[in-house]
Length: 495
Ligand code: GAP
Image 1 (cartoon, rainbow, N blue to C red):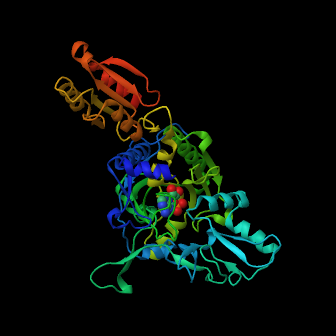
Image 2 (image 1 turned 90 degrees about the horizontal axis):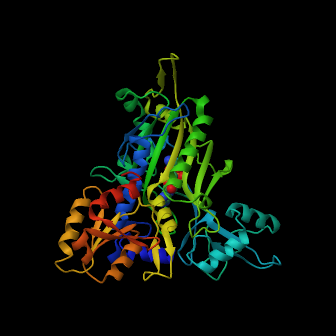
Image 3 (image 1 turned 90 degrees about the vertical axis):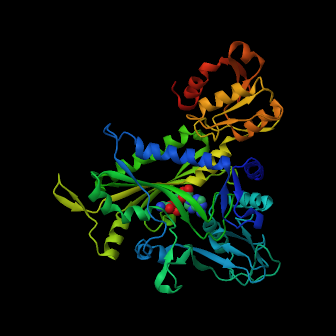
């Protein structure tokens, strides 16, 4: 991860937010290349959901419409959704070190003979040795299961007997307390409880609040979906692992409304669609894992969730969550109907009946998806000057091609500029003129540009250019007139 984070900063993918002020834990900025990569993933999701949604089990396209709702909604929304009362993480504080830990991420280890103090280790500590040791000891068990086993063997007064992760004396950890993860602010000039409002912790709430508006204003009929992409905010106790768990992030969420009896069919349908999505972007089957979430670990609204997990480097050889596909029942519409006093049921004309549809929700982190794509693309190759290249799927690469005049001389530059102007309406391309050609290739390898077109002396004679393939470094010559078709075929699979 250290190398990946360094490359992201060096090449302009991702910077710590407020970098010049020392950063702000859990916040990140997307640089010139990061924003292109993020937009590519965002646009692909939107295209697959809203512009060209998949064919349903009956062979006809499913119906999905888009939405862009406010980040701040009426605070009653979050009472109804259960977030004011229940969107909590348990945390413990250390009175001595003043550090804060997620209680459910702290392993308790007892000495072999059961005598003396126990030690607490923070699974979120950014310490490779501790991480390795915990992985070995826990053998994939959750903290809760592991601690239960330990404490069943040797009953221990948890807090007075434990030495915290960053101190040497026992008894400095507080009892776990529930900590609400919603950021809040005040709407208007007075900062009182009456005008307290929340930044949304998930984007889907705006979809449920607009369910009736969408049904009344569009020609949608159940089953149908509403899709939304946008920022979400969670005051995570321990933001960790680069952009994986941040306090401000982006989500891409689909709420699929269907009849209760059709839930099993649609649930399987969406799991398959989402599997195909990630495979098509270059995440290999071997690096994905589908976890049927344990009943005890389900979110308060869910009766079943399948997590699509990816083998992020910090989790390897295990996996960590990339996307969740949840059956939310009709929990949200029921709650918002009750709290708002507005009827939210759907009238099925064919069946002549009213009901609150059930919801299947594929919810993915856009920014977490960006991290998965970067981790998967990162390829060490000692045989090239850069020592590393990013093997992005061409459709995700921030730059599709670089146009490189061999020298900065008059002979090569005007042709390069002409090619650049010709391509840039259709593709995001880079015109890179200065430095020796080896250094320019190395830079393009490090930012994952799949093709480089080089203009040299031969170009003036026969109108051909060299195409260099990022992964194989093989070079071939093609005619200038064929460059656009070449890219169309390689990037979009068509010419
Ligand atoms: N509406 C359902 C929902 O929000 P979730 O499992 O809490 O469910 C869905 O979040 C996805 O959002 C996760 O699978 C993850 O990709 C992303 N996500 C959640 N918390 C995040 C965080 N703190 N930082 C980055 N991404 C996050």
